[in-house]
Image (tube, rainbow, N blue to C red; front, side):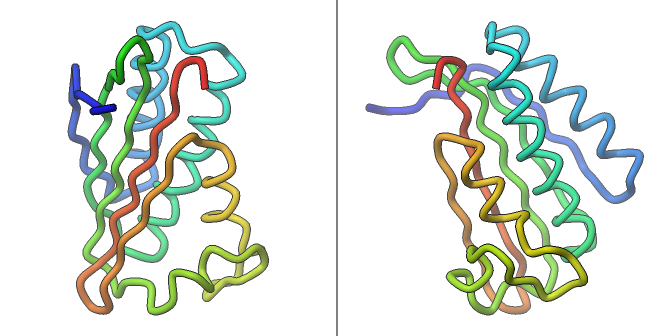
Length: 138
């Protein structure tokens, strides 16, 4: 079934203070579509991890917050796009415990587990784009 966008916000995230505005915008949209508190928490946790990865590894970038619909389901689609060094091995990056930084290596696989749909594209030297969707009742 086709996913259609209903509303869209684009936010630049280049410093830690931008993360707060981004998270607030995600929450506003989630509340508008009557997403339950548990799903809001999962979405915002995944969004926080991905936006911080974008800041830490990609030097910041652009986020897109969209309200989407698929039939009778409404959800939030988030896109994180940076122009950092890219991820040389996405399969490895999606494994629990793998990290190129000094982290636990749980960010990307953990974020994937918290949402309904997860897509990552990366090209060395050109950056990374991660798109997630959390359905209000999913």
